[in-house]
Amino acid sequence: MSAERQSLLSSRASGLSGQFDVPGDKSISHRALILGSLAVGQTVVTGLLEGDDVLATKQAMVDCGADITKKDDAYVINGVGLGGLTNPSAPLDLGNSGTAVRLLMGLIAGQSMTATFVGDASLSKRPMRRITDPLEEMGAQIEIADGGTLPVTVTGLPTPLPLSYEPKVASAQIKSAILLAGLCARGQTIVTEPHISRDHTEAMLRHFGMDVTQEMLADGRHRATLTGGGTLTAKDIAVPRDPSSAAFVMVAALITEGSDITLPAIGMNPQRTGLIITLQEMGGDITLSNERIEGGEAVADIRIKSSQLTGIEVPAERAASMIDEYPILSVAASRATGRTIMTGVEELRVKETDRIAVMAAGLQECGVIVEEGDDYMIVTGTDEAPAGGVTINSQHDHRIGMSFLVLGMVSKAPIQVDDVATINTSFPGFADKMNQVGAQIQSVS
Image (cartoon, rainbow, N blue to C red; front, side):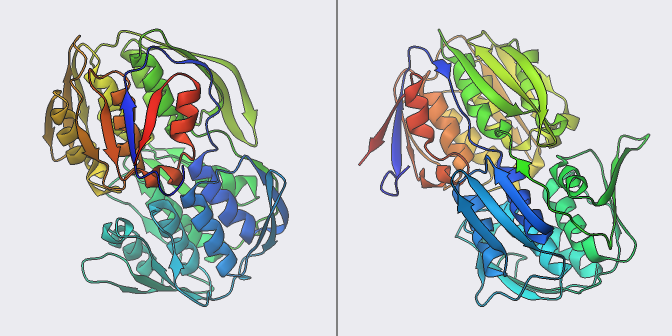
C-alpha cells in the first residue's frame, strides 16, 4: 500500500475464491532478526514479513551493530554473539511496533550497552512499565517518561540478575522481554504466567541451542525457565505464514456468501490457533490439510468456505492464544446468529488503540448491537446485513482498519476506513491481495 492511500472504501462482495498467500508471521519474524543477530555464525531467514514493524526491528538491530543483508528472497544474518552488540548512535525508532520496542528493551537490559527507545504517536501512548519494572529487578537502569510511556532509556548489565517473575496477565511480550534479558544471567530466569501465551520465543531459543523448558502447572499456570550463560548457535529459519493475518481472510470468506478460499502454509503453533477453534465452534467450515513441521514450527494448509455462524461464549482462558484476533472475531460475531460473548480481554484496551472501545463504537455505527465492559465485549448478530454507509477512523491501528474493511464486504452500504497506512505494519498489500480473490476495495483520494 503506497503512502498516499490513506483511506480505503470497501463495498459488498459477491464471493471470494482462489488461493491466498498470507504474509510471513510477524511475531516469528521479529524474533528471527533478534536472535539471529545474537547467534554465533550465519543464519539465513526465509519467508520474513517485510512489513513496517519487522523492518523497524531490522533497522534497530543494524543500528546496534548487527550484520543483516537481504539476498534474493532471504535475509542473511552474520551474528555478533551475546555481548557483541554496540551502543546505537541515535534513539531507536520502532515506529508503531509494540512487540519490537518491548522485546528490544529486554535485549538491551541484558547487554552491556545503553539505548533510548522512541516510536510514533500511537506507540508513545502505550504502557511500558509492565516491561521496565521486571527489567529493573534484573539490574537494568531505566529512564522512563512521566506516565510510564516512551521515550525510555535502558542501560543494561553484562550479567543481569536472574529473576523469577509472575506477571498479572499472560503476555508474550512481557515474557519474551524477561527471557531475552536473562540470556546472560548466571542462573535461571523464570516467568510464570496465569495462562500460557504464545511461545515463539521459547521455541526459537531452543532452535538456537539455549536451555529453555516449559511446564504446565496443576493450577493451569504456565512456567518458562531459561538457563542463562549459554551460546546461541546460528541456524536457518523458515518463517511460517501469519495466523493473525490469515484471520482477516478466514473471516471474510466465512461471512461472504459463495466463498471458497485456500490459505497455504499457515502457522499452527498451539498458542496461535484460538481463533480457528472459535470459528469452528461457531459453525465455520474450516478444514486443515497437509499438516507438517517447517523450520521448527507446525504449519498447515487451510480451506475456508462461507458458513452460517452461531454466537458462542468464548472461554476466557483462550484469550491469550488469540488476543490480536478479537477485533476480526467481533466482525464475524456481527454476522452470527445470537450473542457472542468475549471475556477476559482487558489486554485489548492497551493495544495500538483501546480495541474494545473502537470496535464497539464502529460496529454500533454500522447498526450492530454491542455491549462492552472493562474486560468483555458482547456482540449480538442477526440474519440481517449490517447497514454500513459510515466512515471509520482506524486510529492508526492496522487490525481495526482491516476488520472494518472486511465488514464492508457484507454491509448493505460501503464502509470507508481512514488512516489505513499502518496496515503495512503487518499485512503489506492487503487491499490489492483481497481484490485478487474477489473483494471490492478501492482507494479514496
